[in-house]
Length: 422
Image (tube, rainbow, N blue to C red; front, side, top):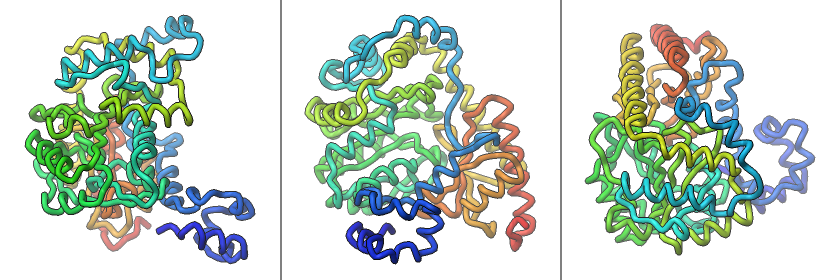
């Protein structure tokens, strides 16, 4: 837990903080610069941030850490011509023709009626949308509820803003995210907002339509805002579930964040779409203007081109990833590592309870011994030391080789559980 800022500044001023081994390890020869740091930085979960950054720095390893599919083939030939056409600053809220096209997509696919001029912002990815949401609606010291496990950015973004976390435990059962409704209702009491992600990162679990209706009901009853991360909307391998913002109880209290990173393989181009009632979107737009306005024009034009790709191509892509999901779980099972098959997204949430290392240490050893980068679970779940996450979003052949190496290594370590992979 971070030290309160006033105490931290006292320890810095007196020089006592430099005696703490954890601080010395984190700062190295940068101790003299601590006196310049703001309270927000000092109270951030800096050790967690450092560990997460180290895990994401894959170097030359096979990357099973991050979920970044390759660019969809239909877009590969357009970048050069779009670069030549792009010039000047775009509108702060984004190119109007892109917003109109996305509003049409929402009407067709998500049963959402949106005014593209007042209720839609083009953002620098969903990550910026989350930050704008937390800045616009939640003060330091106020509570944010989120399901556990969850995407590491949720925790870190809220903690970095000195907001309190209320975690709602979940389990994965037949590809579905399950939670206790009483615990959920209790966590919402006193919370300002709820963060929702289905399909879920890191487990791949999905909420059913009935689950989402109960979530919307309790959020309305507790008067809680909803931030719905829809980044994996096209990677649901089971029955279709509605977008929570389309439900009557959630319509006017939900900010939905969509992305081109997964569906179209545009993670490198940082395009997100923030959608909600105009009176929720407006303060987020103000925050965007004051922090990081102007999503690059050429990236918005590529996103506009992406929206012209036929639905059949997206369905083929989803089926490809369904086959990858089946192949990934098959590889793990062959090496004696059984998991609950994810219902969506492109991750396997792998338990390592029977090994003698915490997830972070295990991932360090995996990278060293197998040349594969995996994501440790510490930043993804309250019990994350007992899990690692593998992504099957890499190029065909590459991700399979990575899964084979990791599964083989886990099998060997499992055969000698008292060993620390010596």
